[in-house]
Image (cartoon, rainbow, N blue to C red; front, side, top):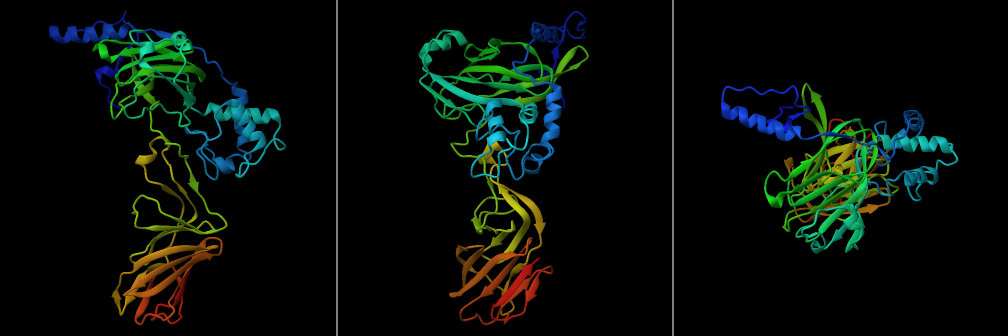
Length: 451
């Protein structure tokens, strides 16, 4: 990472003596250093920090069974990720313990209360929480601007004012709506994963105060021009902290708010930015991150998938085989086994990312058709689910034609082509890996499969 001067922050000044051949350059560098040198490192104690022994025990217990659904890295699989910002049922220690103990009805999350002891379940919770980072249990209060006009933001001031609106933010990301006209107070748990020195930074829009464990650690008022920023270096231990941020966003169509927390690394007499945690994001607009998985019936899916287009139709069969079908050319573009579709691979930037297919690539079966030995195009009419199969209706030169797609064994699929009257001169182009059953193939009647 190439650092600019603005990223280099002196740790102390007693050993600093800036020398430069040009008086102006020397003055400029000294001025920058003196501004940064006014910062001091403040020690903070985490409000909640599980013991290393409990975390280690929880990791061991987690690896015995939980890993099957949630993955070794906790990023999910059959079950959801346990380290992203979005928690459907809640992210508090109590809620996570209750979920492990009693399970979730209607899902594959069974109750583990009779399987693991209470100590083991609590250790699993400690391990899961130790792998978190960022904001959790975020909520937002909104107030009229008049209550804070000409006044410095403070927690005591907010306590004496009734909020106009209060709501939880399940995305655990700070965001603002277009033309929002209020003072916003966000309250959350801030979870720090690694010990170290940290610093808050903003995009310097409007007015912002950040409080940690009730103490103001950052303030900026961009409406007063430059040099109206006050910040402190924070020596934080792994664990959770009380987090509050007040912000007055300028009323605009596209809010520009940005808030980050940077972990600093010591390099000689200076700190430099090692990595950054972003607290701002986008709303899911009431939606939920979802995985589309196979069920007892076939599924028809329209999703934007990388390297494919919205013209392609996806068929997910009960044996977890997913087939991407091009209806215009009546051919299989791609196929996967043990497949599912992640509709929201990036939780907080959902609208900017295509869905992602998770699965093992499977060979194609059908490469299209020839009509009298020439490539031909079809008109796509419809797709219909018939239990574990999908019936695809097409037409060619006004003549109706059908394809039936169905599971074949545990990891394969079969396509059957037929027409009530047959289409003279219509032949199929199978893939090299497919098994083609010869059955009046010149009239478009065929059966082809991949096992």
